[in-house]
Length: 100
Image (cartoon, rainbow, N blue to C red; front, side, top):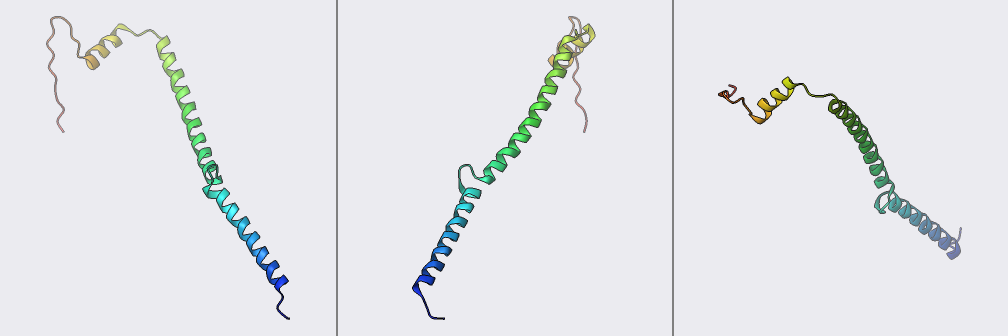
């Protein structure tokens, strides 16, 4: 078969178009500011944040239920002694360190 410039040009044109399409797909898939890879990462982050948001809403509901219940005097006294180091007027407090 004899060499033909028209066949060679068509072949070259097809290769260039195919290469351009491949380059475009790679660009859209990985390098664009809204690439498929980044969209996947954003989707994963959205799922994680949605789950965390639901857990925090549940925690808020539990804390609101605790706030609705009045605290007993013994609980208030225990919190004041343990967390704030408060004492009654004629008491002496000795702090003990745990041995390891």
